[in-house]
Image 1 (cartoon, rainbow, N blue to C red):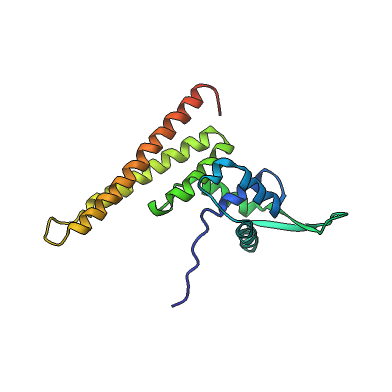
Image 2 (tube, rainbow, N blue to C red):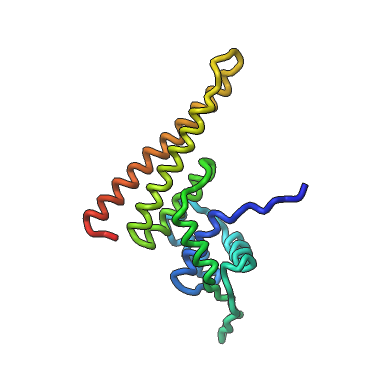
Length: 187
């Protein structure tokens, strides 16, 4: 069976750095490392950043040109393409589609959505809350029957429900904080 290529997810966050200005790979890796908020959830090595930048370029989200330097080796400077810009905008506007990816992907989306402005961040949180409510409804509709031998399935189901409830509680905190920032005049 051929391997199916998974769609890009967290990698779109790298486009957010280049969206601000053209950068070379080392600068992007340094910014990622220096951005404490992202470092809490996104611990990539420099080699991973380079590999993902190459992949994003191959997918048409980035272009690059080699820039010569007088006393140093040439460096590859990346720029966002129109396709990359559209992909980035779609990425920060859409909720994380699976609970298993939430911890890694949502904080990165929220970080870049806040860079775009408070409205983008508030919209993202709202869409994610809607998605989580749908996840919860789906799980609750599949609750195991109270039959002998279903104890394990019931425990796993309870665990998954409690994870989503915890995510929803945190998203409510995010919404409240972002709403307070809006009231204080912070975009």
